[in-house]
Length: 124
Image 1 (spheres, rainbow, N blue to C red):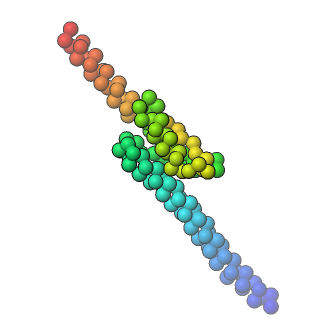
Image 2 (cartoon, helix red, strand yellow; image 1 turned 90 degrees about the vertical axis):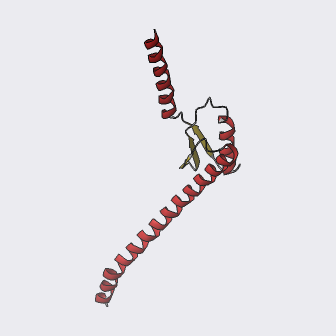
Image 3 (tube, rainbow, N blue to C red; image 1 turned 135 degrees about the vertical axis):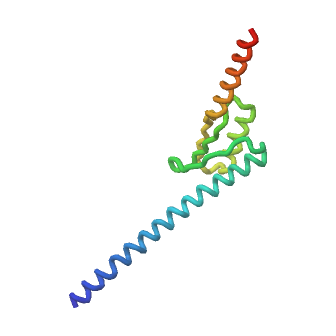
């Protein structure tokens, strides 16, 4: 009887462990798919209203959602985009919306100023 119990433990334990790990991986993939679906939902809503002005990044944060927008806070559409991103999740959800100035926009602005300075220095 103890030999049979030993065989069951030796054979059954790895099977239970593998099935448990597969269930864990499945749950993690489902959670990631839910985050991706929410990101697509927010992106589609913004693109429908304002065109392709920004692509949000959606993550889970503190029991709710965090939407990061690479949008300059001085942009005239910034407040409306933030409001729309929060409305997509509904009133019951906890949503943080963060505006992050795009580093490429700042570089682009600096490059334009440098070209203008060079042009004015060369003409003088």
